[in-house]
Each structure stands twice: as C-alpha cells, then as structure tokens.
Amino acid sequence: MRRFLCGLLVAILSASPALAQAMHGMAMYGQPALPADYKAFPYVNPDVKKGGRISYGVVGTFDSFNPFVLKGMRTTARGIWDPDYGNLFYDTLMTRSAGEPYTLYGLLAESVETDDARSFVQFNLNPKARWHDGQAVTPEDVIFTFQLLKEKGRPPFNARMKNVARLEKTGERSVRFTFDGKQDRETPMLIAFATPILPRHATDVGRFEQTSLSVPVGSGPYKIKSFRPGEAITYERDKNYWGKELPAKRGFDNYDEITINYFLQESTLFEAFKKGDVDVYVEGDSSHWLRGYDFPAVNNGDVVRDSFTPEKPPVMLGFVFNTRRAVFADAKVREALTLAFDFEWVNKNLFGNVFKRSQSFWQNSALGAYGHAADERELAILGGAKEKIAPEILAGTYTLPISDGSGADRNVLRQAVALLSQAGYSINDGRMVDAQGKALSFEVMTQNEGQEKMAVAYQRTLRLIGINMAIRTVDDAQYQARSNNFDYDMIVKAYTASLSPGMEQFNRWSSASRDQPGSFNYAGTASPEIDRVLTAMVNARAQEDFQASVRALDRLLVAGHYLVPLYYSPDQWVARWKRIGRPDLTPLLGYQLATWWNAAAQ
Image 1: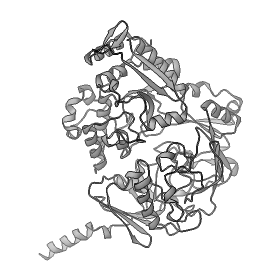
Image 2: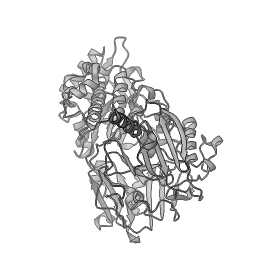
Image 3: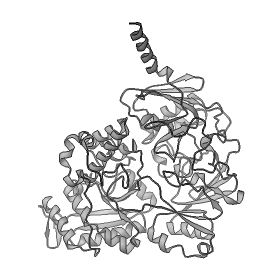
Image 4: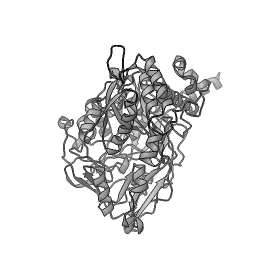
C-alpha cells in the first residue's frame, strides 16, 4: 500500500503544472536539437562584425506602423513585423530556428514551462529585457498585449486567446496561459513566436485600430531612424539593444542601418538594383533569372547570383477559384478548368522550361500525398471523406495531365468538355452554356505583368471550348483591398508551405475563416471534412499521426480542385552586390536575410 501511495503521489506531483521543468526551448514534436548551453544557431556566422548599411527594395507603399489591425494589414511599413527581415522592431517571447522543422528558443522569455498535454504554458521573462525607452518588459505587458489583440487585433492575432481559460502573472517575471482543454499543441508555439509583445505604458488603446505613422516603442534590435511615407523607411541598430548577447541573436542584426525603399513597379525596383541603389534582389521570375542579368556588374563579378535549395516544400502557386461565386460552386467545373490550363505551353514559352508542375500542397515532402498511398492511419483520419476522393488521389498516383504543349491539346480539352457536360454545360454556337443558356464566363484578377501573361495563355485555351475568361490587372492597393474582401471570381495566389503546418491552415481552409474579411481563405472553402482533418493535424502528438493528417488534408484539397496548380522551382534565387556577405550554410528552411552582413565592415 505504501508503495502504491508513493507512486500515486509521484504521478500527481509530476503532472502538476507548478512543478513543470523550465526549458530553454520548445519543439512541436520531441525535444529541441540544441542544448541549453548552445552558443548560436548553426547556420549563422557567430563572429561576424556588425556595421555598415544595407538597402532593400519592395513594390508597394506604406501609410502605417501598425500591422496588427485590419486597416494596416497591407500597408504597414516593412520591417516593423516582418519575418523576411528578421522582425526588426518588435521581439517575441521566443524565436524560431530555421535549422529545425518547428523549434523555438528563448528571446524575451529566457525559459518556458509546459506539460505533456500542453494544458498550460508559462513564460519566464529575461530580467534584461527592455523597451527602446529603457523600461523593463514585464508580465503586465504580455497580458496587456494578448487582451488588446483579442479585442482590437486583426486575424490571426485576435484568435490567440480563443482557448485560453486564464491568463495571469505568476511571479515577478512570469506569466502563464492556462487553456480550456480545447486547445491544440501548436497554440503555445503561436503564442510564443508568432505574436509580438507590445508596451502597455506606450500604447494608445483608444487609437490602436487607426492607421498611424506615429513612431511606436518596440523592444527589437532596431529603431526607426527616418521615413518618407510611401517611399522609404530607415532603421538604425539600437546599440543598447537588450538581447544582443543572447545565443539566439548571435550572427543576426548585423547592419548599423537598414533602409527599405518602395517602388511602384518591379521593373523600376530591378533598375534600382542594377544601379546599386538596392543591395539585394529576390528573384521570382525564371525567365528573368535566365535572361535579365546581362549587365556590367554581373559580368565583372560585382553582383553575385545565388541559388539556394531549402528542404522545405515549395510554394503552391495557382489560379484560385472563389467558390463563393455560383459559377465555381461545382467541383466538376473547377476540375474541368484545371485540366484546361496548358502548363507545358506556358513553361516552354514563358519560363524556358525551368519549372515543374505542382501536384501537391506539400510537394517534395514526406507530408505530401503525391507519391504516397493513404495508409490505415490516414484512412482512419479521413473517415467517410475517403469515399469522396478519387482512387488515384488516395493511391498517391494522381497527376495533372501532360499536354502536347500546343496550347490546344485536343485530348485534354476533350476531357475538360466531358467534365463540364457532367456539370450541365454544353457548347452552343461556340459558347459554353448551362441548361438555361447562360454562358460560362468569369474574370481573373491579376497583379502584375507576369501573372497577366499566364492569364492570357489560359484565356486563349479556354476560348477554344467556348469559355470567356476576362482579365483585369489592378494596382497593388486595389488588389489587396479586393483580396481582403473576396471581391473577385478568380485570383492568383501563392500558398507558402512548411514542414510544420498548423493554425495558419485554418486561416486558409476552415469554415470559420470563409467569411472573415482579411482571412487567407481565398478559395472560400467550408467543408466539415477539412475542418475535422485540420483539428486532427494540430492535435497530433506523434510525428506519424501528424504526417498522416497533413497528407489527408493535402488529398482533400487536391480532390476539391480549389485552385489551378501552376508551377514551382526547387530553388530560391537571390542576387546581391558582393559588398553583402552571407553564411555558407543554408538551413532547413532556406536562406535567411537576417543573418547576412555588410562585407565592408569586416
């Protein structure tokens, strides 16, 4: 009996949140790869000498320093809250390692505590953490931030507290989130690294939802030095930055000044790069990468072109159907229109055959359904939904058709017409019409010349089977506004992928996000089957269950034909002036601009 009671007491104490062990990091599955005494992330140059300047360029404009509300969602100055450049202005409780699928290490929080069920998470703040004005970062700031964003923030910030039953200060420097039992395993991770902490003493709550160019108070490695609204913003490194000695910050924040210049067009941005006014150019156009770099600075070695091959899945780019529109309500119609896109013609004539056709939302990954048959674990997750999925998709053998590259492949178009016939359409006097004689027509909204060229090729092929597709190219502001409000028939969008998909997938595909302005549910999906698989994905505890759930989601998305998959490149392309140096090692998640430096400072 004594042995039994002792064992029971040990079990109870072990399960007690109060006795959870403080850890230096937190992984989605398993344990962090780096030990508690790690010195730096392995993909940085930890001994780099800081100094010098860098100039980036982006297309667009800005009129706000607040990216956390809907009004400022698309027009906030880059760098304020911007993973591309390393989140210059605001720090988070923890930071993510690009060398691991999904692992976080301490930043504002020097340690984290949680239990196996992740029924709670406690962050113990670093006593050195300071705001730019010198005041300490406190648990009260953390509590204030999450309550403010719950009330006034935009998606997804306003959803962070959804399953938090209690948020409280538990010590001089500690704050704890206790969950309601409905949370998933990723929720503590998103609280830790995907939510910036705001200063309670320097935030105007009454004006928080308004766009503003009043310089805020942050805790990050850079302050705002100067700006010209809509044209440029310059950040200067805070020499008193509280976190500069942290192991998670070694090899980062290497410039004294960072300037981000804004341009109206991509071509103007590239010309600025050619002249040396912009130091780094991230290339997304294959034909331009092949043919656009014949200028003196490249030929004499002053401009270096780098190709990186990350181990994460590539972006899924596609013509997205807005299923809120009646014309795209039938999956047969969407499948037919998907078949009609002649990728081979586009790849050859527009892109020099450098791209590959996307077959999966997690292409080239163990998480993707393509090339992997659904096993018993995955079939159990799919449940009755498997009856709605084509056998070849379940088998992992489904592929989009390979055309003859003519832009008018009769065999492929015949398949498309047959599917449209099943949906009640027929060709009458050269027009594809429904049973009431209404023509099948829609408009695609494009954002730039590259998208427009693809749309024109698509338009030409669709015209052969009597479908009228109009093309409307709009400026960046209109594109973003209409995207936010789902005001389009079809749109071109890119879906980033990772080895650790989680709550962001709800914002793209869940029923709850379908009619939420500002969400990324561009396709308008509202499927109980997708919702159920999403829930299984974020609640998976074992890697095998997680992999099965992601593959199940992939199969449902492919089977639903919510977009016309376009193309991907296995490589990332970046050109830089040689005065900008970079580490030799490319981490799992690809190149990291925040770890580069000005070589002249060395």
